[in-house]
Image (cartoon, rainbow, N blue to C red; front, side):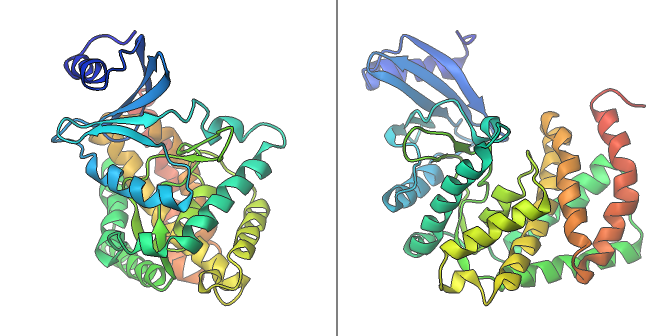
Amino acid sequence: MVEPDARLALLEDWLSRDLNLRPARIEPASSDASFRRYFRAFCANGTYVVMDAPPGREDVRPYLRVSKLLEPLGIHVPHIHAADVERGWVLLEDLGTTPYLTRLGEPGAADALYADALATLARLQLHGAPAAGELAPYDRAALRREMDLMPEWFLARHLRLNLPEQTRAALEVTFEWLIEEALGQPQVFVHRDYHSRNLMVTASGNPGVIDFQDALRGPVGYDLVSLLKDCYIAWPRERVCAWVRRYRAQLGGSVLAGRDEGEFLRWFDLIGVQRHLKVLGIFARLWHRDGKAGYLRDLPLTLYYLQQTCREYPQLAALGALLEGPVAGELPRATACALGSGP
């Protein structure tokens, strides 16, 4: 049983008195990089997941709104049974306890799991245009704001690098080029965190999709790269490219598929650079601002993706030089120091 706290006691009262569920017990289900918490409530008629989003720190309304956009498209999001917007509670369908990440390493599992995830993504992108129209755009300001997290939190705060003016100017040019490339892609419904920790293995309607409240209308390659260049698990480039080709085939002759495989792969790779720059900044910020050290262990894989792509595109040579040199040199020391095992 969870140690009592004020919000948990109120949440139990909401379930029992307002919803007449009277749970036999409540256990932690998961937490994430925000201030949200999730609990599993064991009731006479089954189990539920309860989102606890403290008002003033979190707002459940975006979650409720995006859920209503996704569910009619046949995307298996947790069905909402009840919500108290003012107090920040949502009663959800329980999608189980098995995220993709725990199963992907099993022999022979990856192709089947990714086939389901890619089919779901294709359904969302091919049929989700009206829903995407209800979302805010992944515009220039949003793309730039995210990339700026990398020099602020990863380079300056985590690695303590003081970049020369020439390098800062080169980053500026690179960021602007990446923004133009992102805005040039077909714009679709973007989950923004479509990866192995947010996809649940379910007996029917696999996968269950969670953590979608920050969805925007943005580049077609974004969710695909989130899935196949996942910051928590890696695959050989050849295998990733095969999945990308397979996905493009599912898009048929639509404009979303691009002129040819080369253009589509370019979209995939370059929006991946934008995403992974952002992720470096977020993972560092989660430690230096929020005291969450677990994501520091995922920095090397995120950096590897960036290094890999920079070697493929001449326009990313300056960024690649920074990543291969000062960044790669300082990252092990900085992270070891943060985790308490370094000087």
